[in-house]
Amino acid sequence: MAQSKTFVRLLAVVGTAIVALAFLVPAASAKEPAAGYTQFAGCPSPEENPKIELCLRNVITGGHFQMGKKDVPITNAIVLSGGSDVNFENFAANSKGGLIPVQQTVPGGVTGLTGLTWLLEFFGVSALSLYATTELAGAPDPNPLKEPIELPIRVHLTTPSGVLGSNCYVGGFTNPIKLNLIVGTTSPPGPNKPITGKTPEFEFDEKEIIHFENGQFVDNSFAAPGASGCVLTLFGFIPISINGLVNSQSGLPAAAGTNETRQDFDIEAVEQRLVYP
Image (cartoon, rainbow, N blue to C red; front, side):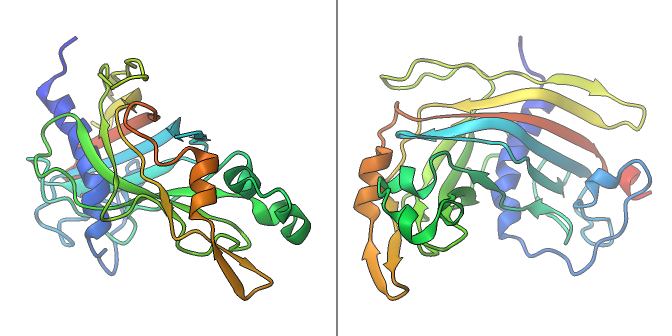
């Protein structure tokens, strides 16, 4: 089924805004939205940004992100809120909006990531829990009106104990993971097979909010680089680089055609004049 021009723009604006909003400095204060529109609190009011005409809210509600041998479920919702002009450009967010990094639990923890089971004797199970946080690693494609949605990202690996150091990443600003998210069917290199996303259901409500619900973005054509900056510190003062261990245990770097992400999403959009009458 053909997608409307407005729908394609809304899908593209979400992907572009994820990166664009991250590089903006939020306003010092935010005006309160009208009753019934409080979920759009991250959208700038006319006083905060006179160019904004549309308020947007995107929620990644579930899915997974698999690189090499590691598959991380998206169990904690990721919320983006902000606004754009009528042409879906000039994205901005106030102090209540933008994209806040959210930790996702990595199955197997640090021992699964490194294969070093003896670490349990030094740190214990809870200290070796492992979290992955998706961060932005560059600017988006300059055209916000097309699919695929091109997103350069990096994945930050952290632990409660700091046993991996503070700079353990897969991908970076010079070698990002380049996602190309679509709701259609992919054409990946082998051995991956095509997978299909889901066009969301569409409706207006009595508050004139446009809802795109139960959609799914997909991509299984991206490559994943090796890990960098992963340092194991023993006895509090002996740093040992374990990038090689992380890569060998996790199957990194992983060529295009061996990775996959599915991202369930809901989108809301409304005219700014209704949020801030």
